[in-house]
Length: 328
Image 1 (cartoon, rainbow, N blue to C red):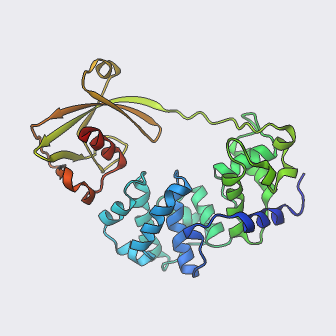
Image 2 (cartoon, rainbow, N blue to C red):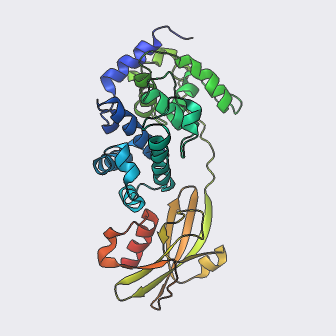
């Protein structure tokens, strides 16, 4: 099935069609390593178009590894605000410190050393090796998986196991221009071999694709378990000030500020006459009752926020959504 010129076709397509992304610009080796590190952390569970403005702002404020190492944690979180999954920002800072102190400020070129750094697993380590160090690795993200499933028309549960997908990935093996090659394959998945309505007419792999030959492009989606939970948020207000608490109670948004909340049962939610809102976070559908109380109940983990000066605080999108529902 494999044609010897597949890598050439993929690279030719990439040279003519790749997106202009801020972490891809030509720069020094040191900057490329740093840009790759930051972008890979940001791209975990987040789309490219969402990441671009955050990356540009982050690099403007923390232009190199040293500046990130020396930065105040709160300032880093403030620049991450709205991007979500805040543990990534904390892990990025911890990883930057380890690279600076233990690796002379350079990204390790060994996969096990990379995986020993906070927030770097199998996928991110291979992305860094390929993109920053030009090593012959092809990270297995959703885009690469989708291409492999269509090339080989993999449908059954046995065919789409992680082990079989890794085995089939040998279809792409190539050792030259490894950085561009890894990005090219992921780019084809993102721009051409899309989940729905793939643009087969411009795909460099059209002649090798069983899905195209059979006109069967359906990708069996993984069942994402979205649980529904019920909460009661209490809005304590005094004049223009609102009470927030540092979250040590729930696993989501750990250590970030939220309105005081309690988990409740479905029955209490259903029969409540209070205002109700719905917020989706990670794999959870949150149904929230909004109760108002003008009597403040301060604790050691609480703080008062003036609604006229919200922007100076680090607030997760979740808290901002509740704020917006209250201020409407």
